[in-house]
Length: 441
Image 1 (cartoon, rainbow, N blue to C red):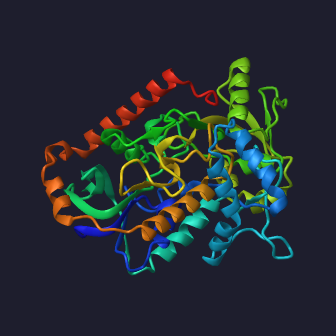
Image 2: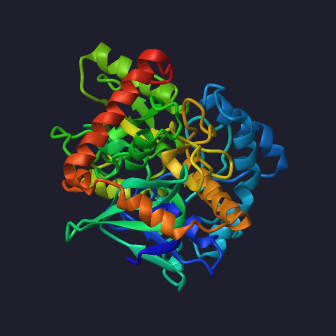
């Protein structure tokens, strides 16, 4: 890596990539990731991305989002997201994202839990992968953007009360060094890696959240953690839990108890369905409930959910002839680093976008398929805000600030990251004790 960049972005999910795409091409940009670009939660998103279905759909979409979020949402953020959804999806189409189409060529839309109508654009059951790959392909064509893999953020560099870069570690060489930037954007995803069972990649341990806690940058609703109702149950339960998309229930799959009797309305918001599953598991004395995909037409399953069919087959289940066992697991983080509608945090020159931030758009519980949309939109808005208000840092002051740091504290990155995870767990417990997350189960 070079010593100085104009903008430094942490994370190669859709938020980080879309931010890079919307920065001026005369700015030198580095996008770093802890692993490889395909190990972001954006890449794992199965269901799809919401798109407003005409002006007449606004009130319904708004109400669905607010209801799922228990009316704790930032109304301005929700309005902004919904009103921008058509433009965001249209831009993705222009990038070559291959959304499913109807016979007449129009965008096909499906429905998921919490939605009162079909408004979710999708690509089979791997929409996130399709979008992330197309964004990454476009970013890699930009001469002003450098994508740096296997590089871990260890700390912020603070000078004159603002952020002027990062302390990072090369995962392969172990070298620790400062990288300076006029602006830094945290787009480093969720916190699933601090939980035993999560749909997230294990390397997503809330590092952005941790460094902000360390520097007194405001965070909000750190205990607002979403549990996804349906992940494939395996006896080992080791590693990342495999998500069974909300779209499966949106297309007609039903949840059954140990006696194969339906016990809940599958299209309620995620926290409600999760609570129902936990109650049923307790009542039945089981470790899982059954999900029956057989009500969905066979050809629809094959076309819409090929990855789920394949994964279930690997585990010994034929979704066309039998039910599959499912169990809830940690999935999404509604809290995070406080940011406004342009991604600004409480520290000058520091932005946060995507799952790592909290602008209030999701409230206490995220509505299905709003995550990709939210991440793309507010990352773009952050890039435009940086461009509109750009001023450089004093590089000598930044280098002096870094020289005053005790680099001994970064000599064992793995131990530091473990400390960060413990700090996040502690902060979550304190927040939960102070104000329990009523949507949590």
